[in-house]
Length: 180
Image 1 (cartoon, rainbow, N blue to C red):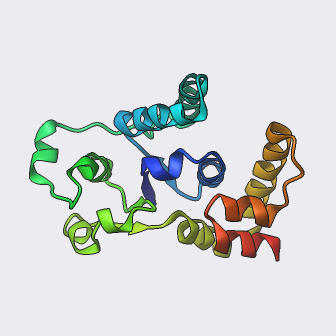
Image 2 (image 1 turned 30 degrees about the horizontal axis):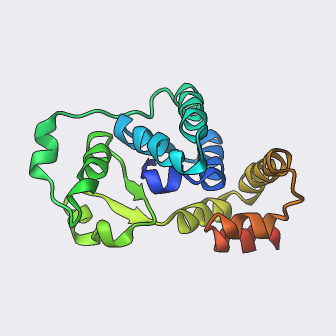
Protein backbone atom coordinates (compact mmCIF):
# COMPACT_ATOMS: atom_id res chain seq x y z
CA UNK A 1 0.00 0.00 0.00
CA UNK A 2 1.18 3.50 -0.84
CA UNK A 3 0.15 6.40 1.37
CA UNK A 4 0.71 10.09 0.66
CA UNK A 5 1.43 11.82 3.97
CA UNK A 6 0.02 15.34 4.21
CA UNK A 7 2.09 18.00 5.95
CA UNK A 8 -0.29 18.01 8.91
CA UNK A 9 0.69 14.43 9.79
CA UNK A 10 4.42 14.88 9.15
CA UNK A 11 4.98 18.07 11.13
CA UNK A 12 3.93 16.87 14.58
CA UNK A 13 7.05 15.01 15.70
CA UNK A 14 5.51 12.08 17.57
CA UNK A 15 2.91 11.43 14.88
CA UNK A 16 5.62 11.52 12.20
CA UNK A 17 7.91 9.23 14.17
CA UNK A 18 5.17 6.63 14.60
CA UNK A 19 4.00 6.88 10.97
CA UNK A 20 7.50 6.56 9.57
CA UNK A 21 8.47 3.90 12.10
CA UNK A 22 5.56 1.77 10.92
CA UNK A 23 6.53 2.46 7.29
CA UNK A 24 10.08 1.30 8.08
CA UNK A 25 8.64 -2.08 9.10
CA UNK A 26 7.42 -2.49 5.52
CA UNK A 27 3.75 -2.09 6.42
CA UNK A 28 3.24 0.60 3.74
CA UNK A 29 5.19 2.87 1.41
CA UNK A 30 5.16 6.56 2.40
CA UNK A 31 4.97 9.26 -0.25
CA UNK A 32 5.35 13.05 -0.15
CA UNK A 33 6.42 15.91 -2.38
CA UNK A 34 9.12 18.54 -2.04
CA UNK A 35 6.35 21.07 -1.36
CA UNK A 36 5.00 19.01 1.54
CA UNK A 37 8.49 18.78 3.04
CA UNK A 38 8.99 22.51 2.51
CA UNK A 39 5.69 23.24 4.29
CA UNK A 40 6.92 21.12 7.22
CA UNK A 41 10.18 23.10 7.44
CA UNK A 42 8.39 26.45 7.24
CA UNK A 43 5.78 25.41 9.83
CA UNK A 44 8.58 24.59 12.28
CA UNK A 45 9.39 28.31 12.51
CA UNK A 46 6.69 28.38 15.19
CA UNK A 47 9.09 26.51 17.47
CA UNK A 48 11.46 29.45 17.67
CA UNK A 49 14.55 30.75 15.91
CA UNK A 50 16.11 27.31 15.45
CA UNK A 51 12.88 25.50 14.53
CA UNK A 52 13.22 25.72 10.77
CA UNK A 53 16.89 24.71 10.76
CA UNK A 54 16.13 21.72 12.97
CA UNK A 55 13.23 20.71 10.71
CA UNK A 56 15.42 20.96 7.62
CA UNK A 57 17.86 18.56 9.25
CA UNK A 58 14.97 16.19 10.01
CA UNK A 59 13.73 16.54 6.42
CA UNK A 60 17.17 15.48 5.16
CA UNK A 61 17.12 12.45 7.47
CA UNK A 62 13.65 11.43 6.33
CA UNK A 63 14.64 11.81 2.67
CA UNK A 64 17.71 9.64 3.26
CA UNK A 65 15.65 6.99 5.06
CA UNK A 66 12.98 6.89 2.33
CA UNK A 67 14.71 7.91 -0.92
CA UNK A 68 11.87 6.68 -3.15
CA UNK A 69 9.14 8.55 -1.24
CA UNK A 70 9.36 11.86 -3.09
CA UNK A 71 6.96 12.25 -6.01
CA UNK A 72 6.93 14.81 -8.80
CA UNK A 73 4.45 15.64 -11.55
CA UNK A 74 3.86 17.91 -14.50
CA UNK A 75 2.01 21.17 -13.69
CA UNK A 76 -0.80 20.10 -16.01
CA UNK A 77 -1.84 17.49 -13.44
CA UNK A 78 -2.72 20.17 -10.89
CA UNK A 79 -4.62 22.09 -13.57
CA UNK A 80 -7.16 19.28 -13.96
CA UNK A 81 -7.69 18.66 -10.22
CA UNK A 82 -10.11 20.36 -7.83
CA UNK A 83 -10.44 20.50 -4.06
CA UNK A 84 -12.39 22.91 -1.81
CA UNK A 85 -9.10 24.49 -0.74
CA UNK A 86 -6.96 25.17 -3.80
CA UNK A 87 -3.88 25.20 -1.55
CA UNK A 88 -4.30 21.43 -1.07
CA UNK A 89 -4.38 20.49 -4.75
CA UNK A 90 -0.65 19.76 -4.63
CA UNK A 91 -1.35 17.03 -2.04
CA UNK A 92 -3.90 15.38 -4.32
CA UNK A 93 -1.51 15.75 -7.26
CA UNK A 94 1.23 14.05 -5.28
CA UNK A 95 -1.08 11.16 -4.43
CA UNK A 96 -2.14 10.75 -8.06
CA UNK A 97 1.42 11.04 -9.38
CA UNK A 98 2.69 8.52 -6.85
CA UNK A 99 -0.15 6.05 -7.50
CA UNK A 100 -1.08 6.26 -3.82
CA UNK A 101 -3.94 4.27 -2.41
CA UNK A 102 -4.71 6.73 0.35
CA UNK A 103 -3.98 10.22 1.65
CA UNK A 104 -3.21 10.33 5.36
CA UNK A 105 -4.47 13.65 6.71
CA UNK A 106 -6.30 15.23 9.61
CA UNK A 107 -7.97 17.69 7.22
CA UNK A 108 -10.99 15.61 6.22
CA UNK A 109 -13.07 18.58 5.06
CA UNK A 110 -10.41 19.59 2.55
CA UNK A 111 -10.38 16.15 0.90
CA UNK A 112 -13.98 15.15 0.06
CA UNK A 113 -14.34 11.40 -0.36
CA UNK A 114 -16.22 11.67 -3.68
CA UNK A 115 -13.49 13.84 -5.22
CA UNK A 116 -10.78 11.43 -4.07
CA UNK A 117 -12.79 8.43 -5.31
CA UNK A 118 -12.77 9.92 -8.81
CA UNK A 119 -8.97 9.58 -8.67
CA UNK A 120 -9.07 6.08 -7.15
CA UNK A 121 -8.05 7.41 -3.73
CA UNK A 122 -9.41 7.53 -0.23
CA UNK A 123 -8.39 9.46 2.84
CA UNK A 124 -7.79 8.33 6.37
CA UNK A 125 -6.86 10.03 9.60
CA UNK A 126 -3.51 8.94 11.06
CA UNK A 127 -5.06 7.38 14.16
CA UNK A 128 -7.30 5.02 12.16
CA UNK A 129 -4.47 4.34 9.70
CA UNK A 130 -2.05 3.32 12.45
CA UNK A 131 -4.69 1.40 14.40
CA UNK A 132 -5.24 -0.77 11.34
CA UNK A 133 -1.56 -1.65 11.24
CA UNK A 134 -1.61 -2.38 14.98
CA UNK A 135 -4.54 -4.76 14.45
CA UNK A 136 -2.58 -6.58 11.73
CA UNK A 137 0.76 -6.59 13.56
CA UNK A 138 0.46 -5.55 17.21
CA UNK A 139 4.01 -6.55 18.11
CA UNK A 140 5.56 -4.56 15.27
CA UNK A 141 3.57 -1.41 15.97
CA UNK A 142 4.15 -1.79 19.71
CA UNK A 143 7.90 -1.92 19.10
CA UNK A 144 7.72 1.27 17.02
CA UNK A 145 5.70 3.04 19.72
CA UNK A 146 8.10 1.85 22.43
CA UNK A 147 10.98 3.34 20.45
CA UNK A 148 9.15 6.63 19.97
CA UNK A 149 8.36 6.76 23.69
CA UNK A 150 11.99 6.14 24.63
CA UNK A 151 13.15 8.87 22.24
CA UNK A 152 10.53 11.32 23.56
CA UNK A 153 11.70 10.72 27.12
CA UNK A 154 15.32 11.37 26.19
CA UNK A 155 14.65 14.45 24.08
CA UNK A 156 12.15 16.06 26.45
CA UNK A 157 13.69 14.99 29.74
CA UNK A 158 10.18 14.08 30.88
CA UNK A 159 8.92 10.70 32.05
CA UNK A 160 6.23 10.31 29.39
CA UNK A 161 3.75 7.47 29.62
CA UNK A 162 2.72 5.83 26.34
CA UNK A 163 -0.96 6.67 26.53
CA UNK A 164 -0.37 10.33 27.38
CA UNK A 165 2.26 10.75 24.67
CA UNK A 166 0.14 9.24 21.91
CA UNK A 167 -3.02 11.04 23.03
CA UNK A 168 -1.13 14.34 22.95
CA UNK A 169 -0.01 13.39 19.43
CA UNK A 170 -3.69 13.06 18.42
CA UNK A 171 -3.52 9.27 18.25
CA UNK A 172 -6.02 8.36 21.00
CA UNK A 173 -7.23 5.01 19.63
CA UNK A 174 -3.68 3.83 18.99
CA UNK A 175 -2.78 5.03 22.50
CA UNK A 176 -5.51 2.89 24.01
CA UNK A 177 -4.50 -0.14 21.92
CA UNK A 178 -0.78 -0.08 22.68
CA UNK A 179 -1.33 0.78 26.36
CA UNK A 180 -3.80 -2.08 27.01
